[in-house]
Amino acid sequence: MRNPSKVNLIIGLLLLVAAIVYTVCYTVLHLYVIDHWRNILVVGLWALAAVVLAAWFAQRSLEREELIRRYYLSRDWIYNHEIGYAPLSQVVPDADAYEFVTFAADALVEMSYGFEVAETPDDFEPDFMVSTTRFDVRQTGDGAVVAQWKGALHRVVRDQDGNRGTYEIAPFENAAELAQLLEENEALE
Image 1 (cartoon, rainbow, N blue to C red):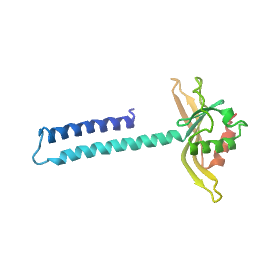
Image 2 (image 1 turned 90 degrees about the vertical axis):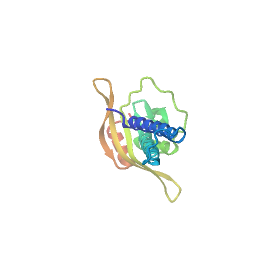
Image 3 (image 1 turned 90 degrees about the horizontal axis):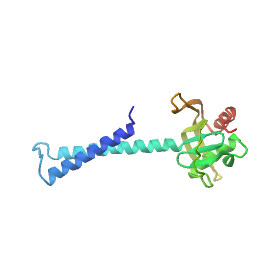
Image 4 (image 1 turned 30 degrees about the vertical axis):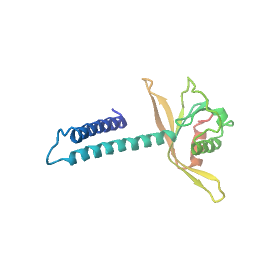
């Protein structure tokens, strides 16, 4: 199955090239001028190219947003697409699920782990993935920043061919449910 994002990009770029070539031929060289259609074809090609490329940019933005909202956990490491790797013992020294949830929310708000990011470990094999379908940051009356979570805890598995995949263990509706799921599945131990 082809990646729809790449297909949109290729189609958009081809339409853009066609629009540029036709515009040059039409305006500069006065070739391919169709008396009854004139500017309609030029405007149509440019508009179509713009729409397809805009769809591609929107899709890429959503994909990036989805990747940012995922944490991969192994027994020793934590990984986020935007932030990078960090030793789990440095992030959550006591293997406390509530501490992890608070840390992860703060890291997503600041887009930083708050300390130097580690080099990518060669043997990183995540056991769990925390994916968030909603991550809202709100400020309370006393100025504290509170993150509202919603998403699911997933188990990361490999199939017979060695391809990595995930299956959902359970959804969560808030930070407390996520912490409880992490504890029940011993995700931080």
